[in-house]
Image (tube, rainbow, N blue to C red; front, top):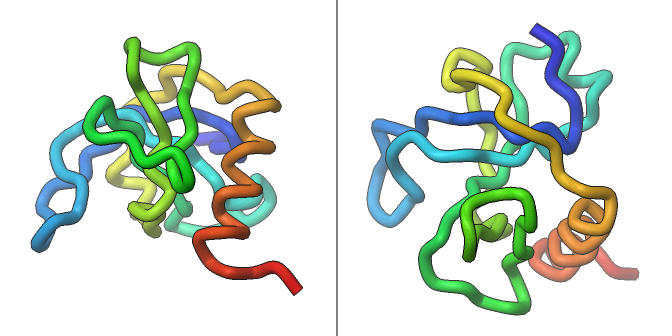
Length: 109
């Protein structure tokens, strides 16, 4: 299965612990495509319609109204959790996500 950065996959997040985002929902693949080709896991950001925090979330325009990538819920997921590809993020959304990841992880020099 080919999985690329920017793909949006319907992903099964259960079971979870504590306040992790749960259930089957869309998730944005953020790990590099070359890594995805050889690894058994991918890094994903869940997409939700729940509470929005402007500094750490990014609206996803081609998803259900009010959907946003929840940057602080970034996680590694087994490829077995990926059910089917349902779309792709726009380049502008990926750029915003990159900036918010840098802020969230405090990666600026």
